[in-house]
Each structure stands twice: as C-alpha cells, then as structure tokens.
Amino acid sequence: MKRLARIVCLQVACLLLAAPAVASEDFAQQWPLKLSRDDGGAYRVTLDASVYRQLYTHDLRDFEVRNHDGATVPSALFAPEQPLVQAPARIALPWFRLPATPAGGPAGGWELTGTIDGEGRLRGVQARVNGAAADALPQNVLLVDASQAREAITALELQWQPASTPASAPASALDLGFRVEGSDDLDQWQPLPVRGRLVDLQRDGRRLLQRRIELSPARHVRYLRLTPDRSDQPIEITAVSAELAGSAVASAPQWQPLRGRRIDQAGRDAFEFNLEGRFPVQQVDVELPGNHAVEWRLESRDDSGAPWQLRAGPWMAWQVDSAGRASRSGARVLDRVVRDRYWRLSASTPVSGDPALRLGYRPEVVVFLAQGPAPYSLVAGSARARRADSPLSQLVDAMREQRGDAWQPAPASLGAAQALAGDAAFTARRDWTSWLLWSVLVLGALVVSAFALSLLRQPRPAAGQGAAHDPETPGGA
Image 1 (cartoon, helix red, strand yellow):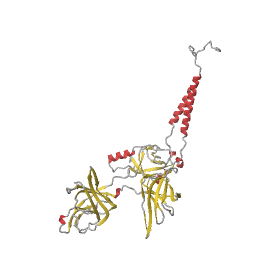
Image 2 (cartoon, helix red, strand yellow):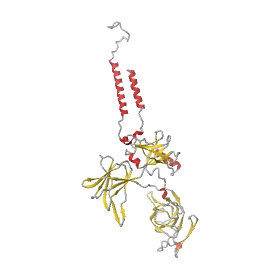
Image 3 (cartoon, one colour):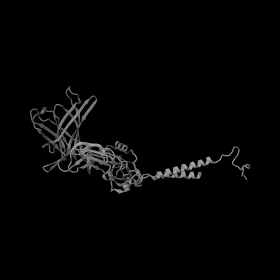
Image 4 (cartoon, helix red, strand yellow):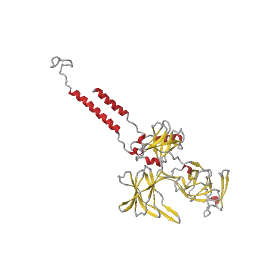
C-alpha cells in the first residue's frame, strides 16, 4: 500500500512538471519580423490589417513576439504617437525688424534693400518707409528668413521679452494678433490664409501663454512677414524658430469599408455591420450615392447579445454634386478608441440606397526587446493565450531620458502571414491535462483513504501482549 501511494505522488509530480506553456498551436497565424539592423536592441513594428483581423481579445492580449527558439520575448502595445512620434524638428530662423506701414498706407509700402548670399540666405535688410513721419513709426514688423528650411513650415514659435507697457496694464500682459505674408523674392508678397496671435497673460498666479503661429496648410516660402494688428503694444522679440512638416505627428487614418444589411428599427431605416477584427476605430464616415442629407446615429457592441452603446450622433452626413464637382461632409471623430465587432447606423429619415460605413483607425505599434537568437516572429489570434505584462513603456521612457527625445526603437516590418492553428485557435480547447491531473489527485486521495481505513480496521493487540506467538491463543501452534 505504501508503494502504491508513492507511485501516485510521483505521477502527480510528473504531471505538474509536464504542464506545457502556450504552444504555437494556440495562435491562428504568425508573421516573420524583418529587422532594419541587427544591433537595435529594441525594435518597433507597426501592425497592419492582417494582424487586426486575427486578434481575438478586446484588450489585444492575444499576441506575442517569439525568438528563433520559440521563447517569448518582452513586448508591449503602444499607441501610434508613443514610440514613433518624436518632438517636432525645430530650426532657428534669422529675423529682422521693419518699420510699420504708415496709417492709410499700402500694405507693401516698404522699400527694402537686402543682402543675400549664394544660397539665398538673407544676410541683412535695410528698410525705408515713404512719408514724413516714417522715422517715428515703431519697428514692430518682423521679416523672417526661412530660406534655410528644406521642408515646409507648419508653425512659427516666437520668444520675447515684454517691453514697457502703460501703467494701467500689467507688465507681462500681451494679446497681439498678426497678419502673415509670404514671398520668394522680397518684392511680391502674398497674404497667407492664417492668423497669428501671441498671448501672455497672468492672473491669480496662473499664466496663459501662446507663442505659436500655426501655418495651415504648411508653407514652403523663402521669406515670411509678420505685421501686428496694432502698434500700441510693443513687444521685444528675442528669437524665432520653425517647426518642419517632415516631423508631422499624426499619420493619416486607414479605413475599413463595411457593407451591412438593412433592418427595421421602430419604423426607421437602420443598417447593421460586422467588423472582422479588433481595429482601434476612432473615426467614422458614411458614404451614400447621389445627393443626400441624412441625420445618423451610430451605435456599437462587442457581443451580439449585449445592449447597443451610442458612439456618435445624431450628426448630419451630406453630399452635393454641383457643376460636375462633388462636395461632402467630413468624417466624424469618436471621443475614444472603440474595438467593437458589431455596428449599427440609424437614420432619422427614410434612406434610398444602402450606405457604406467606413471605420477609420491609426495602426498601433508593438515594441519588443531582442532576447535570444533571431529571427523573430509575431504570433496572434487566440481564444486561450494571454500575453504577460512587461515594463516596455518604462524602458522607452528611460532610453529617451538617457539618449534624448530623438531616440526610437529600431524599425522592423511584418513579413507574409503564415498559418498556424487557423480557426482552431479561436475555439476554447478542453483542457484534458487539468482533468487528468485532477483525476490522478482524486485517485491518490482515495488510495490514501483506503490505506488509512485498512489500518483502522486492524485489531489492536491486548495490553502486555506483543506481536510474538502466544501459546494460550486458541489455534496457536
């Protein structure tokens, strides 16, 4: 009996040690990862639609990055702006003062003499304004030399030292609007469709500060001229810098077009759509043929039996074709990222034709640490596997703190998708190992109980009697 108990315990220990880790058969597909360099240490890869279509869980925990040996390496999911977008590239721009235009004078009433080097950079400016009172005009117009900017400028940022102000105003109070003009030759100036405003206000220990002048759309001109709306609030500019379009922070959204089915919702036209995958939807758009103006409500849910949740609306989507040119409403931005699979559009009026629902998203990024031998691969899509947490976000922050904001994980790209378990990965597998383990444990408990009962049933020897032969015992020989 003791030998049998030992065997049961040994079997239980073997089963515990043999409990397997998550196997590749638990994932639907894998993608080989192509590294941009071998010594990157940390890498980033942008997810594409093929990965989103395989992801199963709402929190996107069913993907992993693995090395050549099949071991899981630390990885984490980042929003698009976290690992990819750096601080906008800035360059300092030379600037010069110009006198204000006389009251009632033309907007281009300067006579400029500029010194330009062989690369088109402005080395000096002499300006003169016609008029008897020209010498008394304030030097509050800025001429900015943007000839060294190799990319379009998205914004200007100005630094200043507050000048003396009337006694009735705080020394730091500033609220001044600017007109912006552009030129390529210092002769012909074109007004730009932007307005700038510099603000520096303080109250009750709080400060409102606005130094930027946005140029939208981005401009690629050699020279910029900034003229204040008035001359009664002097400002002492100390530096001018430009943000370049080459470091744009937001990538263009990608779109998933859906065709749905018409349903009747309390007498109103409605349409239901299914989205295959866990796309991070943040914009929505509705396409309908012909001229139209329809008020829509958009709802979604993650399960076919769950209640619908309002995501957008009511809002009006419209389209008008006039003189061969189509004009239409823009996309609607949601207040948060939604990963639901089921979507419903409801119209306030009858709709002729079937609308197409377009769901916009910005791809997220997986950052992983190179551990173990290459090559690496991304596996995704599982109803059973869950990725463990890793401190990759702290690692990225620490690396940027040490190496500067320009540091990024090295790029990696997705190869062609390869099938693993396919659709079988989305089926909750019966865990026969757990059932077998519990069966052995129960069997072991029964064996131990039987052994204990057998000991209890044995007759206890009388006092003073040992286990040796008793000649008085009947039948003893």
